[in-house]
Image (cartoon, rainbow, N blue to C red; front, side):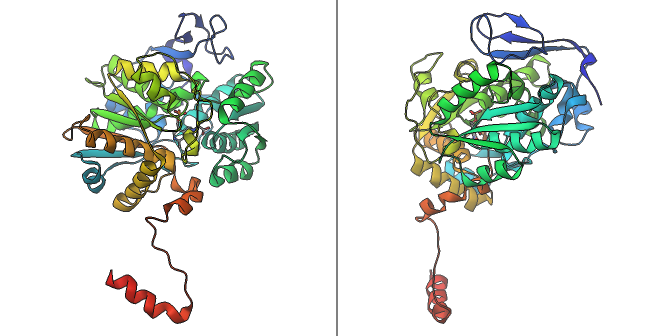
Length: 412
Ligand code: F0G
């Protein structure tokens, strides 16, 4: 058990005006200029890969680099997810070395657990009794589970009819109060930001900079297992996760724990791609998409709150951003499942679909090392099975017809 006396300093800094705030200030955006906040810290102690590797493989292996008071951490064993070498999928994508970081293996089935665990610790430290978030589903499931374990009340604001059934089930199962709103995610987030700003609830969306402190551990784990890849491809909605992963790599570099940095690639769905559009135009903020639409409901986001951080990650890393159609997303979801035995939800498959598109267009070289982050588990969204008919072999028949069906199947 360690706590905060291993740090010289921990503070929140505005990424725009540079104003500094104490770490226990309950702030989600800069009170001076309204921009995003980032957690900065300075370590008093030395760290090394050998210290990290002497500990179990969870995200808390790197606990010095996650500057939260560990006395408040309520863990479900988050992080420590597999990084698979995917040889068959690599051939389908058209590259030599492809790794898959399977975040569906987290306790509630998505990468959100890393950030929510840290966010809940901060909520407890601040004495909050109610936590809240707007969500396309995964954050909701994670916040519901962690708040149940921590013993705090949880209120979730969801876009009605747009949350995958597995995620809604998790939220209800863990006993959260679920408020389904007749608006999209972007509007729900604005609403909950305003409500939490009044101080009655602690906000656990990724605009809360502590969330990203947990999620950057994805970078630590990748570097720990294979070193620094040439590219990391990340499905992007609000832009929190890609900024967190980039922050993680940068911190490792600043500490001298790695010698290189990867290039970050943002993957979005064509119907909800404000970051891709802003990146192509060389802009540092987005023009919101008013009616975002995609089968990948997790990333059905038109006005990403972390866009300035995500775009900064792309420019700083000399990265790329690309969007793919719903068809390409489903095709990649099936390929990941069939070639590698890994079941992911549609949003997660966006990373593989985008990589394949960029390689086929000759934008990315086949002879590099790629990591695709697979953000959530297949069981989150079984509703897409209806759309998979092109790839699914499924027969309904009477027992009497079984020989005829089998003959057809085995002859194929
Ligand atoms: N993949 C999945 C499976 C997600 O659930 C999300 C975000 C993302 C990718 C994008 O991550 O927002 O950090 O860029 N889901 C949020 C939610 C919005 O409410 O669960 P991001």
